[in-house]
Image 1 (spheres, rainbow, N blue to C red):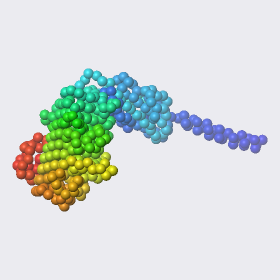
Image 2: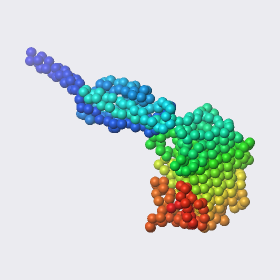
Image 3: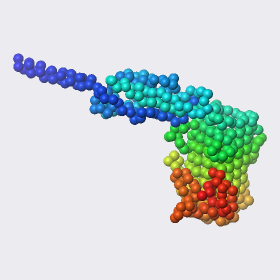
Image 4: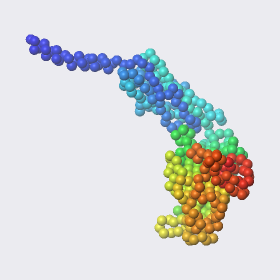
Length: 484
């Protein structure tokens, strides 16, 4: 009888343990939750275009588990906001458990509905959490912006874009953005902001004019994503491209423009033909770039292929290939321009800042050639490589088919190579740090600090009467786009 009693006692112990365990499991914390933020804010989102996904975390700071009896998206602005709780989409969730000292994610997206407002407007919603007697809220906030939308648009006549709302370019079907036909023109008014989605761009066979009256109304070309993660991220859109055409000469004029976050900033001379002879036979695009900034390109800030490009008082910086690439011949004139490349967190600087070439090889032994002429006056060509200028001459000796000169410029270059390809170049500053004020902060003004004075200051006997930002230049003028 005693043995039986002991056996019953032993068998009952696990049962009691299970009972105690179950009871403990049901003892949920009644403490309030904590959150990674009390307001989740989206940067400006264009109407009809979805946002990127943001999130906030919900923390259980107690040692015991917590049961959230109710999570609800309130739909204060209709159904523009959407949430996902730990991988499950919906707008109402019940009995969501968080283990002790643990957390869950709430993911949020928003698509802004269009309205009649021209200025940015704000949307609000909130996610309510009920835990026991506690009711807590996380606010959702998004800035919406209406826009003119261009879906694979082909311009056949004369078109002018207003500046009262941004313009959003979206690739569609066979037109990857905007195509300005041969004989047509597109004028982008002063103050316009142009945003590009995906791999879209502006492709020109006719004429494109983007001239701003002043820097307060500068014309901006950039990617459509405005969240902080995308700031200055290269390769978000294709670029502004001038196409070769047998029937017309494409023209482009840019003044006080900023081109940012593209693959190719301004690309003059691209061909849609697989026959590479078109690069040396068809009409040369004519592009003027004045007081412009082209930055953070995946490949090139300026790419000329047997084109005619004039650039003055302009700043080009940060790319993943040759910053200014001028090849297969052409005519190029650069005055008081700054070309600077050391790469960034997004792109590595491995190719020279400036490439000049009068040939193209197709990789099968065929060479395509056109004469190249270039002048670089009062320019800065500098970067983190030992040699920032690359020459590629078909004849491999100075001839009338490769005529390039540098004068009163600051160059990071192999001096023997410069003498070989540009024997008439003179009065240049070679292989000296230009000593900008803050290149890491994108300030390329020559420094006039004591002990760190830039060699660019007052070096050129003449130049434009004003600089990139409309500041009057004194005589002698500084090398580069910006007067100290």
